[in-house]
Structure formats: C-alpha cells, structure tokens
Image 1 (cartoon, rainbow, N blue to C red):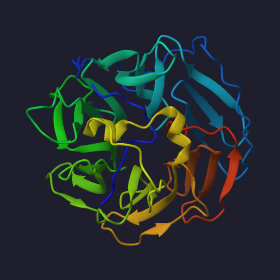
Image 2: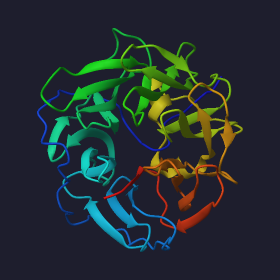
Image 3: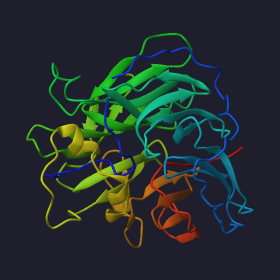
Amino acid sequence: MAHVKGSLTLTLTLALAACALQAPPVGQSVPAAVPLVQSLPTPVVTPQSDLSGLLWVDQAFGEFWRFDLKTGAAQRVAATGPDFPAQPALTRNCAVQARMSGARLADGFANRFGIVVGATPVLSVTDDTSYQDPALAPDGRTLFVTRVRSMSANATQPGSGADILQVPLTGVGEMRVVVTDAMQPVVSPNGARLAYIGLDVSAPPTVTRQLRVRDLAGGAEFAVLPSERFYDIFGPRWLDDSRLIFAALEQSPLPARAPAPASLVDLLFGISIAHAHTWVGDVWIVDADGSGLRKLTPQPLQAPIPAPSPDGAWIALLAGEGVFVMNADGSGYRQISSAGGNGGIVWCVE
C-alpha cells in the first residue's frame, strides 16, 4: 500500500468555501498580464516544424506562458499580480475558461486556491477549504474541480477531505459532489466519462491512490489499475475516448521518511515547494479497461505532467527538467525547452 505524502504539483493547506455560480460566457479569456512580483525569464523554446498548436504552461504557480510549437515563440499571458494563476482549463480554441487563483502569503507564495471562471471568482478559498484541478467538459457548460477540506471542516464525514464537485457554468442546475475521496478529475473528449485519482484512507496514515473512471450518465465506476500497482499516481489525461495517460512512481523515492504530519490532509498535500523536485516518475499509457499498460518515457522525470495534443497523436510533458514532446506511442521523444516547472500544461489549437 502506498504511504503517500502529497500532491507533487500543488502545495496546499486545505480549506471551506462559499460558491457563486454565475459565470461569464464560455470562451472569455483571462485578463492581460499584470506586473510580476518576481519576474521569471522568458523561456527559450526550440521550434518544432512537424508540430502545430500552442502549449499553455503554468510555471511555478505564478505565470502562464504560451509556446507556439512551430515557431518557438514564447508569450507570457498571465502573471503574478493580485493572485497566483495556476492550472488553466481551456476551451478547444485555447480560450481560458477557468483557472486556479492562489491566495497570496507573506513570503510571496500561495498554498490555498480558489477557482476563477473568465474573470469571475466562482469558488472562493477560506480558512477551511481550497480548490484545485479545474477540468472543463468538452461542451464548455460544466466544470469539475477538486475540493479539499481540513479535518475540522470534514469532521462529520471521516475520509480524505477531498472530493470532486460538478459546477454548472450556464446558471442551470446546482453544484454537487460527484465523487468522494477523489481528486484530479478529467473529462473524456466525448464528455461521457470522468477519470480521476481515488483516495483510500481506510488505514491511516497510509493513503493509497488509484486511477479510476466513472460513467457520468449512469454513475457506474471502476478501478482502471489495482491500487498496489504504483506507489503514487497522478495527473491523468484522456488521450482519446478509450485511452489514458498519467504519471506514476513505482517505488518509494525515499528509503526513510520524516515523522508523519498531523493529519491526512497534510499527508495528501503536505509537500513543500522546496521538496517538489525530489520526486521522479514516468509517464504511462493504459486503456480505460486496464489493458495495454505501458511506460512511455525513456527515463524518469521530476514530477512530470502530461498533456495530449487535440488529435491525440502527440504528448507534451512539463517536468522539473523542462518541456518535452513525444509521439503517443513514446517514439520521437525530445526536449523542446529547459523551462521546467511543477504546474499545469495544456495543448490546444487556435
């Protein structure tokens, strides 16, 4: 069973929030970049003549960069200002529909996040709840997010404190919990299924993660892979309607562990920014029925996050070492930028 310390793509102190579900029209872009508190250098991207589209890269939970794959041009499109932007959820034509919005701390970092749709906050961070992992349904009418509550806020319902919310963006319907003890939702291209990471906290302080799929219409759900297959697993993405890619670690990266944090929330999300790059893993592909599991990356990377191209033919990776691309079968693997990070990455076409 996996004794998991936390999400390596986020550093969160988890919290409860009130929601305002009024949203701007689908496709509204984020505001223009605002002045940086600490400016990161412009990334250098090698042009890829055989690729097309844009990579939206979230660096260090503070900036969005847009990389034009064919020309190598890099443009900052959102930067640290009143908040910390992170993990953009895009429409098919690259408009930012939703993103995380981090609450500023005294040292300049953010460890609690709300959700912004267009320019309107729809899920606000409080002392008890934080939100992450915005995932837009293909029709742009629904958003799925992870809500993580502190143990005190979740005292009447023992568990991980994390669940997945379905948030309507059209003013029709109500926000509701879709899956409990779960995080990192992502919707299949046809909108029929939700993949996510299930959390088993039945034997604390052990937290076991499992890749799972849920049918959104009927509610049936199943485990794609057995829980003991990987020590840690995160960042699932649909390559197409029947295949998933994800990052995973097969064995513990640390022979000895520090004393356990005070709560399961800390176990899930307690890794500090300073320790993020000690975690290395690979990117894998698997059929949604659990067959065809195969490793794609030729060597482990620091907390890799995959992003499929819109046609499913290619995969981009954001890792601590930089940005990489490869064919969907793992061939053609190459690095296109040394500008690494531990945020989010999305491949889209204008």
